[in-house]
Image 1 (cartoon, rainbow, N blue to C red):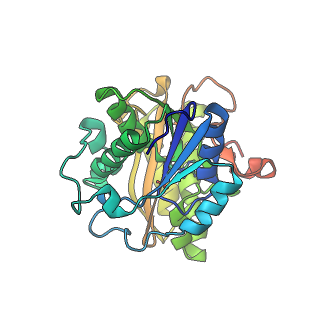
Image 2: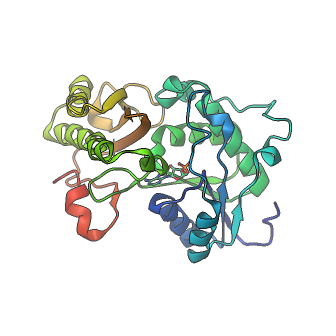
Length: 291
Ligand code: AMP
């Protein structure tokens, strides 16, 4: 792909089935670069054998329409055999350490697939800036590590998580949820908020924050927790001292659907820390952790 001569170029990598979370990245990209490239590619390499690659929502036509409405210059939507002409990759990007923690631990090979496709997209598109969502906090840590370790010359920009009015983080996978599961899925965000509130009240023991999270999600019969952790946002290693800030991260199966969410506690001395964007100003009270 030839993006030279387009001024500064921003890349927003996605798997499509676009929602307001993706569009927030696109709008941020438009504010900082002359040309925005959105890639849409459901990457088989990052799905495990029993995961949802086959049924992952694909709606290219609708996605292109919403990107046109946003004024996006280039949509890059390759086929699987354009990206992996030999059927799969022979060369992989493996991010050690951070890539083996949180989702990297529960989904072996996942971050190898993510890092490999993102490195390929960086080479194909040649962006000055690439934008990712805080919603996938472990992915952000892995890609920061890859960019640093492999000397990619571009800037990563991380945008806040966009949520439904009741706090559920937008995800292309939310459409899998039944009405009952959808209601129970709000427990993920509520558990993060409860832990963050506890930390702000002075609870300094990460184990107690984990218990707070677990207590809330385990009340929901359709929710099976995969992890609930208090970690350093860069290394994804458990945090022992909360003073410097931490990432509260949770992954759970709601029915058959795997969802993730997280909140950053950056500085506990700040009043009303608000890092996540509710969908509309009128919903701010409901989605806010302070409510
Ligand atoms: P995906 O299509 O799920 O691979 O996501 C593509 C990009 O959109 C990733 O950088 C995600 O972190 C980001 N993203 C997904 N959901 C949200 C959300 N609710 N808020 C902000 N960014 C998001």
